[in-house]
Image (cartoon, rainbow, N blue to C red; front, side, top):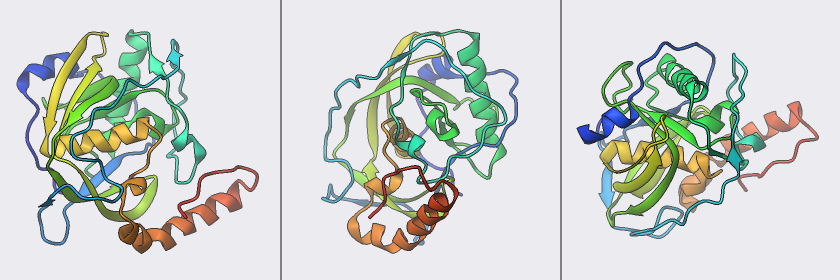
Length: 253
Protein backbone atom coordinates (compact mmCIF):
# COMPACT_ATOMS: atom_id res chain seq x y z
CA UNK A 1 0.00 0.00 0.00
CA UNK A 2 1.25 3.44 -0.92
CA UNK A 3 1.31 6.07 1.84
CA UNK A 4 1.23 9.53 0.31
CA UNK A 5 -0.35 12.91 0.80
CA UNK A 6 0.28 16.16 2.64
CA UNK A 7 1.62 16.16 6.19
CA UNK A 8 -0.42 17.57 9.04
CA UNK A 9 0.76 20.99 10.21
CA UNK A 10 3.40 20.57 12.93
CA UNK A 11 1.44 22.75 15.37
CA UNK A 12 -1.08 19.95 15.75
CA UNK A 13 1.30 17.21 16.71
CA UNK A 14 1.89 18.21 20.37
CA UNK A 15 -1.87 18.04 20.99
CA UNK A 16 -2.36 14.64 19.45
CA UNK A 17 0.90 12.71 19.47
CA UNK A 18 1.01 9.62 21.65
CA UNK A 19 4.17 8.05 22.99
CA UNK A 20 3.56 5.13 25.35
CA UNK A 21 3.98 1.37 25.53
CA UNK A 22 1.27 -0.71 23.90
CA UNK A 23 -0.43 -4.06 24.37
CA UNK A 24 -0.95 -6.31 21.37
CA UNK A 25 -4.24 -7.80 20.24
CA UNK A 26 -5.88 -8.73 16.94
CA UNK A 27 -7.62 -5.76 15.44
CA UNK A 28 -9.46 -4.08 12.59
CA UNK A 29 -7.59 -1.60 10.46
CA UNK A 30 -8.14 0.62 7.49
CA UNK A 31 -6.24 0.09 4.27
CA UNK A 32 -5.82 2.21 1.16
CA UNK A 33 -4.04 1.51 -2.08
CA UNK A 34 -3.50 3.26 -5.39
CA UNK A 35 -5.65 2.64 -8.41
CA UNK A 36 -4.23 0.88 -11.46
CA UNK A 37 -3.03 4.21 -12.83
CA UNK A 38 -0.63 4.56 -9.90
CA UNK A 39 -2.21 7.77 -8.66
CA UNK A 40 -5.49 9.02 -7.29
CA UNK A 41 -7.45 10.79 -9.98
CA UNK A 42 -9.01 14.18 -9.39
CA UNK A 43 -12.51 14.71 -10.74
CA UNK A 44 -15.07 17.50 -10.43
CA UNK A 45 -17.64 17.18 -7.69
CA UNK A 46 -20.04 14.53 -8.86
CA UNK A 47 -23.27 12.86 -7.97
CA UNK A 48 -23.39 9.39 -6.49
CA UNK A 49 -22.75 8.38 -2.91
CA UNK A 50 -19.78 10.66 -2.22
CA UNK A 51 -19.80 13.88 -0.24
CA UNK A 52 -21.24 17.00 -1.79
CA UNK A 53 -19.11 19.97 -2.78
CA UNK A 54 -18.69 21.99 0.39
CA UNK A 55 -20.40 20.53 3.42
CA UNK A 56 -20.92 21.60 6.99
CA UNK A 57 -21.98 18.87 9.38
CA UNK A 58 -24.07 19.55 12.46
CA UNK A 59 -22.88 18.46 15.87
CA UNK A 60 -23.66 14.83 16.55
CA UNK A 61 -26.06 14.18 19.42
CA UNK A 62 -24.03 11.24 20.70
CA UNK A 63 -24.78 9.76 24.13
CA UNK A 64 -22.06 10.52 26.72
CA UNK A 65 -19.69 7.74 27.79
CA UNK A 66 -17.90 8.13 31.13
CA UNK A 67 -16.29 4.69 31.33
CA UNK A 68 -14.27 2.81 28.73
CA UNK A 69 -14.28 -0.97 28.80
CA UNK A 70 -12.62 -3.42 26.44
CA UNK A 71 -11.21 -6.92 26.63
CA UNK A 72 -7.97 -8.08 25.09
CA UNK A 73 -7.49 -9.72 22.77
CA UNK A 74 -10.13 -8.07 20.64
CA UNK A 75 -11.34 -9.65 17.43
CA UNK A 76 -12.01 -7.97 14.10
CA UNK A 77 -15.63 -7.14 13.43
CA UNK A 78 -16.35 -8.40 9.95
CA UNK A 79 -19.10 -7.00 7.76
CA UNK A 80 -22.08 -7.17 8.23
CA UNK A 81 -21.73 -7.28 12.03
CA UNK A 82 -24.41 -4.82 13.27
CA UNK A 83 -21.99 -3.35 15.80
CA UNK A 84 -20.31 -1.61 12.86
CA UNK A 85 -23.59 0.30 12.41
CA UNK A 86 -24.20 1.02 16.10
CA UNK A 87 -24.27 4.51 17.61
CA UNK A 88 -20.95 5.64 19.06
CA UNK A 89 -20.88 7.52 22.33
CA UNK A 90 -19.17 10.81 23.10
CA UNK A 91 -16.15 10.45 25.40
CA UNK A 92 -16.43 12.60 28.53
CA UNK A 93 -13.58 11.34 30.74
CA UNK A 94 -9.98 12.08 29.76
CA UNK A 95 -7.63 10.01 31.89
CA UNK A 96 -5.00 7.26 31.84
CA UNK A 97 -7.61 4.72 30.75
CA UNK A 98 -8.29 6.71 27.59
CA UNK A 99 -4.56 7.03 26.95
CA UNK A 100 -4.09 3.28 27.32
CA UNK A 101 -6.94 2.55 24.92
CA UNK A 102 -5.48 4.95 22.34
CA UNK A 103 -2.08 3.28 22.78
CA UNK A 104 -3.68 -0.12 22.21
CA UNK A 105 -5.33 1.19 19.05
CA UNK A 106 -2.02 2.44 17.70
CA UNK A 107 -0.29 -0.82 18.54
CA UNK A 108 -3.06 -2.71 16.81
CA UNK A 109 -2.80 -0.50 13.74
CA UNK A 110 0.94 -1.00 13.38
CA UNK A 111 0.75 -4.79 13.63
CA UNK A 112 -1.02 -5.09 10.30
CA UNK A 113 0.21 -4.68 6.76
CA UNK A 114 0.49 -0.93 6.13
CA UNK A 115 -2.28 0.00 8.53
CA UNK A 116 -2.70 3.77 8.62
CA UNK A 117 -5.97 4.35 10.49
CA UNK A 118 -8.19 2.75 13.09
CA UNK A 119 -11.52 3.73 14.67
CA UNK A 120 -12.72 2.46 18.04
CA UNK A 121 -15.94 0.80 16.78
CA UNK A 122 -13.85 -1.36 14.44
CA UNK A 123 -12.58 -3.26 17.49
CA UNK A 124 -16.00 -3.38 19.13
CA UNK A 125 -15.70 -0.30 21.36
CA UNK A 126 -18.50 2.06 20.33
CA UNK A 127 -17.05 5.45 21.23
CA UNK A 128 -16.02 8.43 19.12
CA UNK A 129 -12.27 7.97 18.94
CA UNK A 130 -9.87 7.40 16.07
CA UNK A 131 -6.12 7.15 15.61
CA UNK A 132 -4.15 7.39 12.39
CA UNK A 133 -0.72 7.93 10.93
CA UNK A 134 -0.34 8.32 7.19
CA UNK A 135 3.23 6.98 7.26
CA UNK A 136 2.20 3.71 8.88
CA UNK A 137 5.45 3.81 10.89
CA UNK A 138 5.45 3.40 14.66
CA UNK A 139 6.57 6.46 16.59
CA UNK A 140 6.42 8.87 13.65
CA UNK A 141 5.56 12.48 14.44
CA UNK A 142 2.47 12.21 12.24
CA UNK A 143 0.62 10.08 14.81
CA UNK A 144 -2.77 11.66 15.49
CA UNK A 145 -5.46 10.94 18.05
CA UNK A 146 -8.86 12.57 17.54
CA UNK A 147 -11.47 12.31 20.27
CA UNK A 148 -15.08 13.32 19.56
CA UNK A 149 -14.23 14.71 16.12
CA UNK A 150 -16.68 16.74 14.05
CA UNK A 151 -16.42 17.85 10.44
CA UNK A 152 -16.71 21.62 10.06
CA UNK A 153 -16.36 21.82 6.28
CA UNK A 154 -14.85 20.22 3.20
CA UNK A 155 -13.49 21.76 0.02
CA UNK A 156 -15.04 21.62 -3.46
CA UNK A 157 -12.47 19.34 -5.09
CA UNK A 158 -13.04 15.58 -4.84
CA UNK A 159 -10.75 12.69 -5.68
CA UNK A 160 -11.23 8.98 -6.33
CA UNK A 161 -9.07 6.44 -4.52
CA UNK A 162 -9.19 2.70 -4.04
CA UNK A 163 -10.00 1.91 -0.41
CA UNK A 164 -10.24 -1.27 1.60
CA UNK A 165 -11.04 -2.35 5.15
CA UNK A 166 -10.34 -5.49 7.17
CA UNK A 167 -14.04 -5.66 7.99
CA UNK A 168 -14.31 -6.44 4.27
CA UNK A 169 -11.39 -8.85 3.70
CA UNK A 170 -9.69 -8.46 0.33
CA UNK A 171 -12.42 -6.17 -1.03
CA UNK A 172 -11.09 -2.99 -2.63
CA UNK A 173 -13.00 -0.37 -4.61
CA UNK A 174 -12.90 3.31 -5.54
CA UNK A 175 -14.48 5.85 -3.22
CA UNK A 176 -14.92 9.56 -3.93
CA UNK A 177 -14.13 12.01 -1.15
CA UNK A 178 -13.15 15.68 -0.75
CA UNK A 179 -9.42 16.36 -0.79
CA UNK A 180 -9.56 18.70 2.19
CA UNK A 181 -11.52 18.67 5.44
CA UNK A 182 -11.65 21.04 8.40
CA UNK A 183 -12.13 19.25 11.71
CA UNK A 184 -12.85 20.12 15.33
CA UNK A 185 -11.82 17.54 17.93
CA UNK A 186 -10.37 16.94 21.37
CA UNK A 187 -6.95 15.59 22.34
CA UNK A 188 -6.28 12.92 24.96
CA UNK A 189 -6.15 15.55 27.70
CA UNK A 190 -9.54 16.93 26.67
CA UNK A 191 -8.19 20.12 25.10
CA UNK A 192 -10.06 21.28 21.99
CA UNK A 193 -8.43 22.07 18.67
CA UNK A 194 -9.23 22.70 15.02
CA UNK A 195 -7.18 21.32 12.15
CA UNK A 196 -7.40 21.29 8.36
CA UNK A 197 -6.38 17.97 6.82
CA UNK A 198 -5.44 17.60 3.16
CA UNK A 199 -4.49 14.85 0.74
CA UNK A 200 -4.07 11.33 2.12
CA UNK A 201 -4.62 12.46 5.71
CA UNK A 202 -7.98 13.93 4.70
CA UNK A 203 -9.02 10.64 3.14
CA UNK A 204 -7.91 8.55 6.10
CA UNK A 205 -9.80 10.84 8.47
CA UNK A 206 -13.00 10.70 6.43
CA UNK A 207 -12.87 6.91 6.22
CA UNK A 208 -12.45 6.63 10.00
CA UNK A 209 -15.02 9.34 10.67
CA UNK A 210 -17.54 7.35 8.65
CA UNK A 211 -17.00 4.46 11.07
CA UNK A 212 -17.88 6.79 13.95
CA UNK A 213 -21.08 7.67 12.09
CA UNK A 214 -22.00 4.03 11.48
CA UNK A 215 -21.22 4.49 7.79
CA UNK A 216 -19.17 1.91 5.90
CA UNK A 217 -17.01 2.59 2.88
CA UNK A 218 -19.30 0.78 0.44
CA UNK A 219 -22.07 3.22 1.43
CA UNK A 220 -20.02 5.89 -0.36
CA UNK A 221 -19.61 3.98 -3.60
CA UNK A 222 -21.48 4.72 -6.78
CA UNK A 223 -24.06 2.18 -7.94
CA UNK A 224 -21.80 0.80 -10.66
CA UNK A 225 -18.83 0.35 -8.34
CA UNK A 226 -20.98 -1.21 -5.63
CA UNK A 227 -22.43 -3.64 -8.16
CA UNK A 228 -18.91 -4.80 -8.98
CA UNK A 229 -18.19 -5.92 -5.40
CA UNK A 230 -21.73 -6.98 -4.49
CA UNK A 231 -21.07 -10.74 -4.87
CA UNK A 232 -18.22 -10.47 -2.35
CA UNK A 233 -20.40 -8.50 0.08
CA UNK A 234 -23.17 -11.05 -0.22
CA UNK A 235 -20.71 -13.85 0.49
CA UNK A 236 -19.76 -12.12 3.75
CA UNK A 237 -23.45 -11.72 4.55
CA UNK A 238 -24.07 -15.44 4.04
CA UNK A 239 -21.09 -16.31 6.22
CA UNK A 240 -22.40 -14.07 8.99
CA UNK A 241 -25.92 -15.48 8.73
CA UNK A 242 -24.63 -19.03 9.01
CA UNK A 243 -22.74 -18.15 12.18
CA UNK A 244 -25.38 -15.87 13.72
CA UNK A 245 -28.75 -16.95 12.23
CA UNK A 246 -30.83 -14.92 14.69
CA UNK A 247 -28.95 -11.61 14.37
CA UNK A 248 -30.47 -9.02 12.06
CA UNK A 249 -28.28 -6.70 10.00
CA UNK A 250 -28.43 -4.24 7.15
CA UNK A 251 -27.70 -5.81 3.77
CA UNK A 252 -25.83 -4.17 0.92
CA UNK A 253 -28.68 -4.77 -1.55
